[in-house]
Length: 631
Image (cartoon, rainbow, N blue to C red; front, side, top):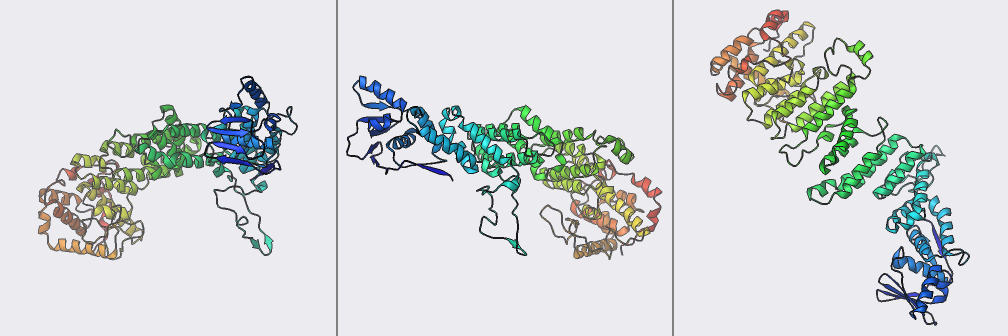
């Protein structure tokens, strides 16, 4: 930090109590100057030789035969006046970034110009500011921070403008030219810690990051920060990505860190609202300058603070352009306080609509040529494949999270799931996990509601691991389990015809697979549950499954406990899957339902979108006669 010493005489100012300051000399004081609550007992001559204003005030007091003057409105208060008084006496005064502006404003108030005395205080301070303070990065920031308490004089003296321009100019230089300790908030460079880095005897050049100035500016108040960012933008030498990073850092410091506490405790959020509006107004318009995760945090803050609709619409439009880059945690925006649900699902639906609308016309000619057949009739047929896969994965993950909310209506869940086009989900594992979670957290669903929910899923698009889990999932309607078994039998037969020995159906060579595999649910006695409710299959689980199938084969009477519904479903499935798999299916179903309940004969006749007619495919699929044996 730069500093300047003025004067040469020792400081003989002394204090008596809290409100009296005097000069300890042999000469008796002849004037009393009151500044706020502090009285200064001083001498007229040194003060009048430097201050034109004091000359005028003393002249007016002499006419009234009163030697006491009150100047309560002096900028900087008693501390700033004391600096000016010591300068008049020639005493040693040290000016630095913390007190120089207050002294400058006080000197302006006292009219300590060159016309009164050459080398007066105003002149000396102006030289110090221009030659030292405005040339130093940290000092310029400190001085700018002190301007708020010295308004409007600091504005009239153009000090704010000088500080803003100095900071903007330094932030805009090439990082390779930055030589000072560029920040006190970030981790220091090795060279600043005294660690001399060498490689083969050659000193490495330390790289200063492009956003080296970001953290330091977070100390500024909102109005000053806005002026600095606007000045940096006007210079035109900083990329929009760095501007976006600066706004992100400022938002975390000034907005996000205390927003939840302020809202939950009912505190005044005026400052937070001002910060949010300013940050949004400063966001760069260039595409890709601000990550979608940051925009979603701003949108969450806007919802919590009840910002105006135009502000939220602006954020939704920007987020919609790149919603596929977000994460599930970013989308978990709390619902309004007057709603029972935990999350604002309608807001996510609006952003998803915006995403589809904005991407519908991108690269249409190329994508229609490449994917015309695969995506015919799709409202998102022009979205790049990577974006389609990412948005489907994102929404499925979001569905799995909001499914844990016991107050989430089925209609909201289904509506959001259906907004993702079918071609965007080549695999339905994520959607199956979300459906299973909803079934788990909402056990009171009716048969028709379960049918509506499970109709979202295409059983043909489940992976072998997901199919294994679904086959043993007692929460699923019976019809869905039959469909899964049927399509897995087709897949198994096709794999066998191609010389592939892998199959989801239980066989001696299956050992339950991998990090992403599914295992048995409560249909199997030997399983291990994970945190998300999806058990992990092990070799022993599969063995238990096979043993249960063998036991059910040896005891055909168990199948009768399912009543007429078991006979009808078994007849429908007969010829399309191994007997032991059906034995496992019905034994598990009848054990959990007791021959009635939800898995009635009406379930076995249910159909779901995306599925095929079982009887038709059974008759038309040649591979049905080449089934694998599970024994």
